[in-house]
Image (cartoon, rainbow, N blue to C red):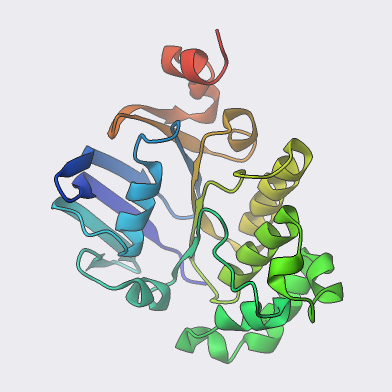
Length: 243
């Protein structure tokens, strides 16, 4: 897995006449876990989709820096991002419910660089999520929400990513499962030397694993800082800590 860095500068994007992002600039450095904090409707998922090529920004810059090379990502298709080592765990998991666990995992390995490592990556997924091994023949749609989230993360790992984008992993999960999923993301990041950008609104869980964070409000970055600084900021106290 090649070390990589994401750079976003003055990104503006939206849907039709509705502008969602207003001049957003963030950095995700190699080996970091960065959390993008924001309540619903503030632009977290739109920013993730811009990086992944699902939404095309109206202006601004999104680039991947890797081995001294700077690669412009704007205008590239989502499959191009995967081939570059950027993989998304989407909000709502977006599995194929009528395919088995193993079939869903195998769909994550279509990247050419990952095909030769299918057996190894499959073992890694089963090691990280033992329940997936025991349920490998089970239809994905019949699993619990927590199990489906594990499967979505496992499918992303099958592509041998360098950068993992995780969009709202806590949505629809019980608090205990949220804690387990967030902890698993941390463990996988450390084990496989990933760079992680996670969009999340569960502040208390997200800061357990983040090195740095950005707070996005109405499509603009309102604050950025290291994890220890986030808890002291007035925006965080107001929106997330009820202080």
